[in-house]
Amino acid sequence: MKNSITLFITLLMFSFGNAQIPSGYYNAAAGLTGYSLKTKLKEIVSNGHQDKGYAGLWDAYKIGDLDKFYENDNTILDIYSEKPAGPDAYNYTPAVNQCGGTTPASEGGCYNREHLFPQGFFDEVNQGFPMKNDYLHVMPTDNVVNGKRNNYPFGTVGSATWTSTNGSKLGVSNFPGFLGIVFEPIDEFKGDVARSLLYFITRYEDQLQNFDYNDVNNPQDGSKNRGFDQWYINLLMLWHQNDPVSPKEIARNNYAYVYQKNRNPYIDHPEYVAMIWTSTLGTDENTASKNELKISQNPVRNGELVVSGENIGKIGSAQIISVTGQVVQTVSEPFKNSDRIVLKNTAKGVYYLKTTEQTLKFILE
Image (cartoon, rainbow, N blue to C red; front, side):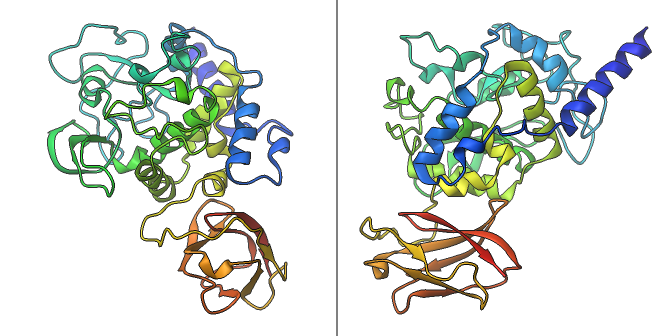
């Protein structure tokens, strides 16, 4: 019987990992960019979303968060203790090692439920529902490491004051724009964290202004649209780009749809991130007036992207982005001296031109 159950779970997880995005799931988002796209994605991922309760997460972890990607031993896959290149310092048996409020003396005692967006910032009026129970941003993690992370924002650490067994760190930020205490997961899971947080401010964009965004540790900017302070957007976009979507994320996202009937759009469509948000890392933040830009020759056949529009010479920066969400070219003051961008190191295919004002799709032939 035990072997039969193991086989069943294995086949079930295989089906989750190889499932397809439901037909037509993102059709309503076609043609949209910027915050209009973000709001439409909010509608899509909210429609049909089922709140399974806080206790339901324990059962979800027993199926959707098993290690089938590193040791492949069916223990709980904890992003704060997993060592991708070697044996973990400890492992957790699903259900057996879960725990609640009591914190062990050291790592390896038990795992609990980590809200990547801290529930301490939630809107108290509605008691934090349904975001408190949302599987797509609540992950199983070691209790002690979860406590060390506390309500600190994620970031990059200059000098660590504490380090977990897998290398996750707590310390003072060295990332441009923030000088406070931050928590840094290992590189393997930075993209996972980024896409989960971007999902959160998309799914709950109409509730963000009720959160405690004045807390020094909360990187919200108080708006519905951008959601986070610009430094945090810069960080999350960088992590999203440097740590692309993994099979582990795809499998978990597919299970989320089985479990609570919604998905993380930034796992399904990584290109949406750059179509909505703009990074200011290393760019001139001067902006043009809000005049519509147009690509004059589309498809592009000679390697030069020709753009028309009033005041385009005031655009401070432009990015060329692939359909997978990778920034393949950044140009400072792209139209200062001409109306075109010479495309570099770009193969034939579909791309996006993103400025602070618009995102335009084009085909390179």
